Length: 249
View 1 (cartoon, helix red, strand yellow):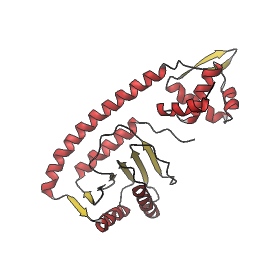
View 2 (cartoon, helix red, strand yellow):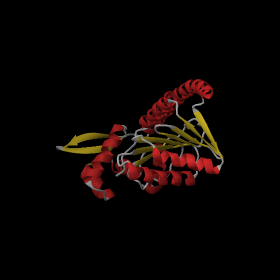
View 3 (cartoon, helix red, strand yellow):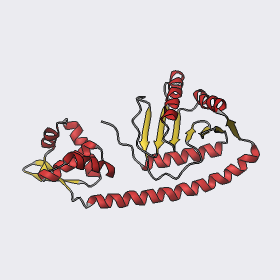
View 4 (cartoon, helix red, strand yellow):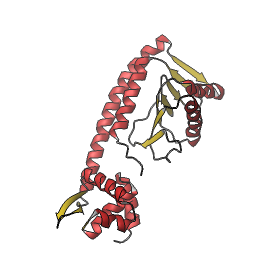
């Protein structure tokens, strides 16, 4: 098959990783093959091959047949990708509707909070830095982070804070959502996921722990109202679970 590397790269835009793309294209080329034949052709281990085949089968991009007592795998028609796109688009639309519904509720809560003085505003670079460092003292066992911008500096600042938290809390777990693909974290306790079509949040960085920390260019906010924190946790977990994180090989 010509330009297989190019085609594999294009298939990653459809939600497949490189191994899944290469496996699907290989089956499309040779019609049917055993797991062993695929592993040999792609020069990957059998356990990895079986994991990749299972993911492709779950997506209904391949099917299994029995031939002389051996299991062979066959690629589904490329038309299947059209169905995948429609499903992804429908999920994104459903997610956006749910997101907007929750935001409407939160806007109402925000108006109530303003009168209760439970949102603290920090202006200036120095106060913003102190607010960010305040995250280091969190008592939460899990931190959720929304990134709406693409500033690498903000990511690096938070990773330094994560390390400080880790020294104090060995069981901390951190999940981050980005609107674009970013490199994986070198910190094993940090999981990252790129999720497109997220409606814009009212801040560039939103940290959800035992408090909510929101960071803009020249100021930051700290929200302590439990109801708002609960809703943002729900919102984050809803999006995170909707886009299932695939374990790295």
